[in-house]
Length: 222
Image 1: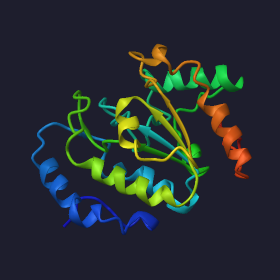
Image 2 (image 1 turned 120 degrees about the vertical axis):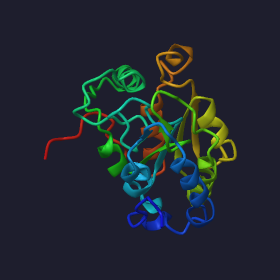
Image 3 (image 1 turned 90 degrees about the horizontal axis):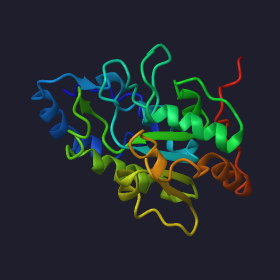
């Protein structure tokens, strides 16, 4: 009996990972003595929110935030009521302002997902206070299968940091947009993330493909 609710996976549900690989990951997680983030009901939030046929942009992160209350299952996203340091997300907001001249203050990135941006980490779980501790747990199999599923049409890939670039190294550049840069973490953002202009470049590419552009700024109030 899985501890994860897989009923909301939609078009991802038939990936072999969920029957072949997930049981072993679950068994390993059951032995983990530390709190694990995000909560089990949010581990597959990125896939649930961005269905294959709707995905136009892929942003690959590393692993979830390892601070209590910060990870929500979408890469780089932080619950709106978190109130703590933004770290990587704060640097993403700075680049949006520099790149587009727009302000983003909303930390919950569900509106990006709803526009077709898949916000997927290369590891989908992390123990409290132990970044990258689950990097070799087997989540890479899922990430590989997701990218294979998305190979059916051109998409934009924003690959920030070594793990993301390694995970997507088989994504061809001929038909897709691949923007590779340093990770937006405070430790590395100044090594090439700042000034990479990923948001304007992605929107220009989407427009050239005949796709609708992404509103990277705060969502419009409805």
